[in-house]
Length: 96
Image (cartoon, rainbow, N blue to C red; front, side):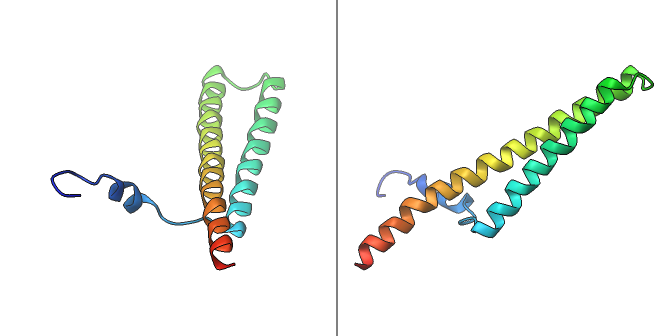
C-alpha cells in the first residue's frame, strides 16, 4: 500500500493454517476429557473432608486453569474450522 501500512500481513503471518478434521476431533476429545477429569475430581474432593484448605485451593486453581485452556482450545478450533468453511465453499463454486 503506497504511503501507508498494510497491517493485514501481520494477521496472515500469525496464522498457521487450517485445522484438519482429525486434529479438530482430537482437540475436542482433549477438551472433553479435561472437563470430565476435573469435574469428577472437584466433585470427589468436595465430598472428601480429609484434605486441607490449601490442597483444595491449589487444585481448584489448577482446574480453573486447565478448563480455561480446554475452552480456549475449543474456541480456536471452532473459529479456524468456521473460517475454513467459506473458503472451501468458494473453491467448490469457482471450480463449477
